[in-house]
Image (cartoon, rainbow, N blue to C red; front, side):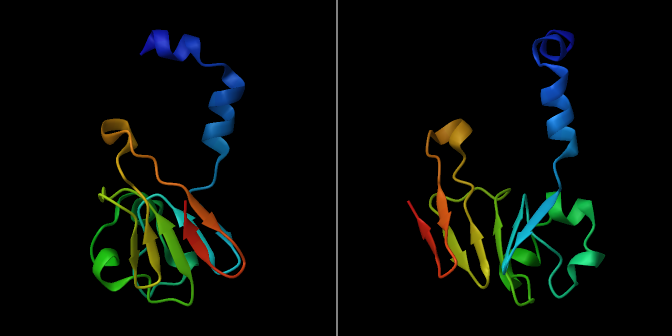
Length: 109
């Protein structure tokens, strides 16, 4: 761990530590794992945003937004109810999913 810490410049560490847990742009919400269905964004916990699977995966966000997320590995992108799962396990499969989000629609490239 010490070798890794010495190899990473402090400004990189600061940048990563200052990133938000979620990013909302228009009607899209970008998070690692998902959200607790039906709960307004202000009531979501960092734990939910980073670790939730169910009931989010089966119910979707139950809010008027589309959640773009990873955390749950899938063989190809999943377009669920108001959610798009894009974690194709690049670290082990070599398959990296890229999602292009435009004002009109999201498209997988």
